[in-house]
Length: 493
Image (cartoon, rainbow, N blue to C red; front, side):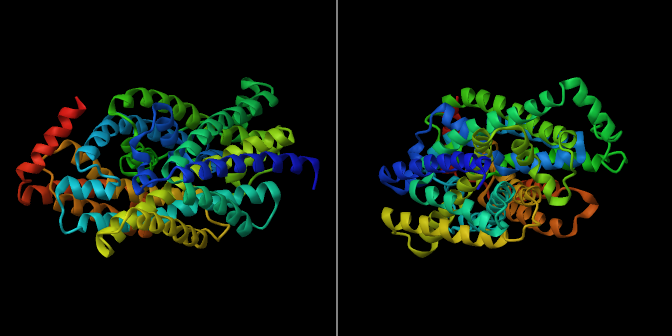
C-alpha cells in the first residue's frame, strides 16, 4: 500500500469511527419508538436545517450532478435552479404547517401516520398504501446511495465494485440500526458541514491550478460551442421547452420526500423554521452551484476523458489529483458523508413505514415499544439487503436511480401533503386517489418515456387532479376534522 493510499485510508477510517461512535451513543439513550423514529421532536435550528439538506442531497450532489455537468455543461444548471426554487418553497410553505399539523393530528410520527390521523381513516387504507409506495421508491433511492458508495471506494482503492458497495452499506446500516433518528440527524449535521466545504473547495482549487477564472473560462469555451450555453444540448441542438421543464421539475419533488419532511416534523418548534430556512438556503445555493462547477471545471482540468458512468467520478478523480493523501481522504469522507446522510435517512423512514404503518396497523395493533423497536431494526437490515441486490450492477447511474425515486415520492406524496395543509375540504378518499394516481403514473410513465417528459410532471399533475375531483364528489369532512384543521392554522399563527 502506497503512502498516498495509507493517508486516504486513515482519514476515511477516522470519519467512519466518528459516525459509528455517534450511533453507539444514541443507542444507549434510546427509550421509545418515538425516540427512534422522530427523536421526540427535539431538533434545534442548525441540526434541522443541515440534517434536512444533507439528507436531501445525497451522493448525487458529489457524483450524479457533477457527472451530468461534466457531460452537458450549463444544461445542468436547470436542475440546480429547479432544486433551489423547490427547496425554498418547501421550507416556506410546508415546513411550519407540517410541524404544527402533525402534532395536532394525534402527535403523528410518520407521514402515513399523519395522513391517517388527518382524515380519520379507520380503514388504514391511506396508511398501508402510503407505506407500500415508500417501500417501492426507497428501495430505489437507498440503492442509489449504495451505488454511489461502491463507485467511490472502487475509484479510490480499486477494490471490486460489489465489495466496495457492501462496505459502505455496512457502515450506514450499523449506525442507523443502533442509534435511530437522533444518530442519523447528528451524523447528518456533521456530514452536511463536510459536504459543504468539500464541494466548494474542489472547484476553487481546480480553477486556481488552471490559472484562475479567465483561463478556465477560455478552456471551457474550447470544449464546444454549446458547453456554456444553458439553452443548447450537448449534441448541438437547442433544448426544447419539454427538456427545460423536465430539468426544472426536479423542484416539484421536494414536497413529497419523507426523509426531508420528517425533519420538519422533528424540530422543537415551528417558530424556529424561518431561521432554519435561511441556513438551509445558503447551504443549498452554494452547494448546488459548486456541484455544477465541479463537473464543468473537471472537463478541462482532467487530461483524460471520463466515459459513460465513469463521468460520475469526476469529483473523486479531481480530488485525488489536487490534494495530498490525508486531506484527500477528508474530502473523500465528505463524499461518503453525502452518501451516508441520505441512505441512513431513507433506511430509517422505510423502517418506520414497516413497523408503524404495516406491522402495528395490520399485524399487531397492541405491539409494545420494544417490539416495535425490534421490528424497525429488522426492517433496516431487510431493506438494506434488497437495496444492495438492486445496486449490484456497476453500470447503474446514480442520477438515474435518484431521478426515478425522486419522481415517485414527489408525485405520490407531494400533492397530498401540500393540499392537506391548505385545503380543508380535502377528504381521505381524495388523498388516497392522489397518492395512487401519482405513484402509478410515475411507474408507468418511466417505462415508456412519452414525449421525453420527466415522469414527475404528469404524475404530479394527475395526482392534484385526482385529489380535487375525488374530494369534491366525496362526502364533506366531519366537523371534528374541520375543527382540527382550524386549530392547526391558529397554532401556526
